[in-house]
Image (cartoon, rainbow, N blue to C red; front, side, top):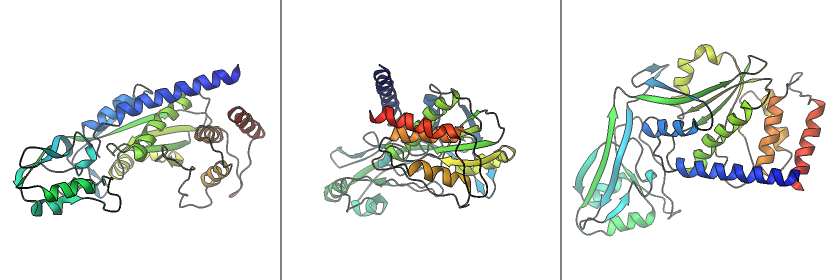
Length: 329
């Protein structure tokens, strides 16, 4: 009976994740723009994260938050009006942050602005031009050949806009624990229709936050959804007093693909976070949900360490064994 309930709960969770993936996947995200706000608003259905805006033009250390970028449409047509490349078919066809263009040109003029991958002929490369006003398209190798062989001029249109009075959007949530010391959990929301990198991370982080809200946590958790690089820099610059409370952090990325879990070690090799992660992943579990659950149990207990050593609380091994038994039976 208990196993049937767990199986039902697991299926319900899988269905819920699948529904959110289908809604979030088509959204055109970038380092700024309405797509990021839409993504964060959808995640607010799962948890009460706060959406914050950092204005374009704001200096954050030696960087500057760029103008906000949005795009309505983009395509390439042949002389007969057939769309050979279309943003609405895949939003990674357009180089992110491309400027507005509408003109007829030859293939020779166009080809310098095309990105393809002959060794992966069905793949669409993901390209950006955040900090240089430019434009371009990413295409499969088959599309590249179709453009090359097209008769007559090619019509190119990019309907995009830049707002100097726009902003960079981030999501933030603080889950208080017994200790005021914080663990930072960060994920990035700037990629468009890329499922593993990193829609999987953004969505899993929301489900993780929902899980943590139901726990009695020893640590406090600060969870942020931000654009890569400029988002992290802006967050640190705008929250210097907050950052001082952070004791350790994790970035959740590419958690939806095949294969075993891995991690990138902290630059401080003797930090307890490295040993925690390594001990959890060394269990060589097959089930993603099992490993994730064990990891969250580990992160929720008090961490007792001497130097680079780590002592597990006695009940942790029992918890892991119980989870292992449920999953594998």
